[in-house]
Length: 251
Image (tube, rainbow, N blue to C red; front, top):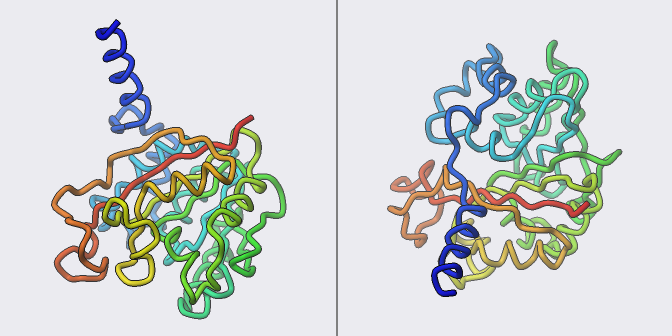
């Protein structure tokens, strides 16, 4: 019995931890990564691991997806090419975030107006009122989940936010959350100071919102990061320990 129990634990661990192999990067994703419109972005690919991350997400041609708080549009450009003409990318800018990220929303609008990126729609809405015009296959947020409970975002209730994302997804849809790791047990303590979040609290909040945890990609984990520094500290910026968590809306 002990041997079987141990085997079960190993199997469970394999189910929730994912390392992307080259074969996992499908031709449509490889083509999107090679898009000439990404020339300025490719210098960051080695550290941001977009191929590994999006292969783990399962995004595919024809999908309707959300790039939530997309920054410079690094992932928006890739997603646009992955989902293609039969898919769509909704770029969502919370009003509160846009006030401190000018001119990023305008950059998103300029990208949506660029030939070859006509499948992008920019949505501006209050942080506490996340919604999509139609059900989507995936919501992606990179390094911004930790912002929602902070004062500048209006101290949005993370569980209520999770429920809004849940509502926007099709049954079986994916919520991919990427963020900077905070010290174990810290909860939301460091979200507004170090710009980090305890991965355990993310799992807890999204479970309360109705999501199932699917697993984690370790592509951005960095054991050399001790989780004590602000993510903008020159000694760690661009190389923080980050979790990539995949959640699913049950069918």
